[in-house]
Amino acid sequence: MLTAIAIGSIILSLFLLVTFAYRGFSVILFAPIFAMFAAGLSGINILPGYTELFMPKAVTYIKAFFPIFLLGAVFGKVMEDTGMARSIALKVIRCIGEKRAIAAVALACMILTYGGISMFVCVFAIYPFAAALYKEANIPKRLIPATLVLGVFTATMDWLPGTPQIQNIIPTIYLGTTTYSAPILGTIGAIILVAVSYIYLEWRVKVAKDKNEGYGHHTINETVIDDTIPLPKWYFSIIPLFVVLVVNFGLSMYSWNSDLIVPFQKMGIPLVAKSVQNVISIWALVVGLLAGIIVACINGHKFISKEGGIQAALNAGAIGSLLAIMNTASEVGYGNVIASLPGFTDIANFLLGIAQGAPLLNAALMVNILAGVTGSASGGLSIALELFGHHWLELTAAAGIPPEVLHRIVAAASGGLDSLPHNGAVITILAVCGLTHRESYKDMFAITIFKVLVAFFMVGVYMLTGIV
View 1 (cartoon, rainbow, N blue to C red):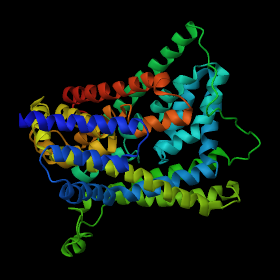
View 2 (view 1 turned 60 degrees about the horizontal axis):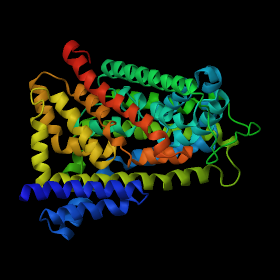
View 3 (view 1 turned 180 degrees about the horizontal axis):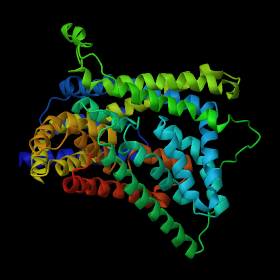
View 4 (view 1 turned 45 degrees about the vertical axis):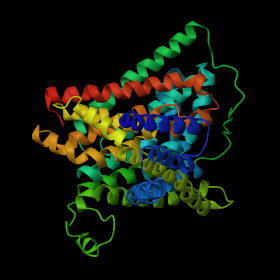
């Protein structure tokens, strides 16, 4: 009876959080409220649960990843305000043309996100061109969100080696790996996922044309591109992206002194990393993004608005990062409270028993479920690795599986069920495009399903071939 109540409290809490988030209420406020609601029903004192469980877990996430959120947002804002992101997107789209509208939009997104630009900034930068291109090609506007999902949330989010997105950074903290883990496996997975998603979207376009469905009549967020606004040359604009990638790669491969953080460990400072290996990827990307920001400011300062200039872009990026990190940290705090409840222990034990002899399958399953619970890929991934990372490392080591393979599989799996209707990225993309869940979510969710299936498929590929 008590177990049923505990599990029921988790389900009810999650339902309430999903419902409120879907209706536009801030998870910063309501994630702790519904976490404490579930805790109270499970017999945990509410106030100590909030101050001693929810907040410490949220703060731990902020400590680890705030530099990436901050510098990533600043870099993206500078690239956006200087027009360099638009310049790159416009060049890619013109080269590929309207006959391959889906490929043009998706490729433009991939170039920007793989170069270190925030996924959200990318959506804002690409959407005006996507809308103009789809209207010219008479492709239904309702397919733009799914195309943006293909561009920003597939290969360059967590599959391709070295991608500077947060989902590829998180496993390095818990597994002691680098962002370039399992490069061959990751590249193959990325190619398969992009190919399947692209074929699906082209098929959806064909179905729409067979029904004589065109772009449609839309009035919300219909943008007009002003061709008179000067933009930097694309070959200058792409330099900051290469700088981020090159510096990040160089410092990731650099042989760091293992004693660098020993003095801080001796001070007894809270939350100090266990070893240098756990923070190398953070350090490498911090320096890479800083270098990219500096180069972007130099290359694009002539094209930025005179009202505020570079200072306004830097400030806006810094302020914008606060909302992103606090949203995710609240989701992480919520997930950790749920994970501490008796009902979750029963659920976790059941899930850990599934595919017990196949630790990679088990890890992919658990990460997917926790990403769905939190509505966040990075939130679910960090919770899963904190709770079960050591357990999975032991199981994979016993099976002779390198931690780099575990890194790639859990990173890829995090981007599956996280994109349920209440996911912040889903809501943002629909809002930017001026569309509704009813119009576009089905095709967005299809790409999500492909992500899940490819993650599990690549587990099988590794087990059969052993490629890393």
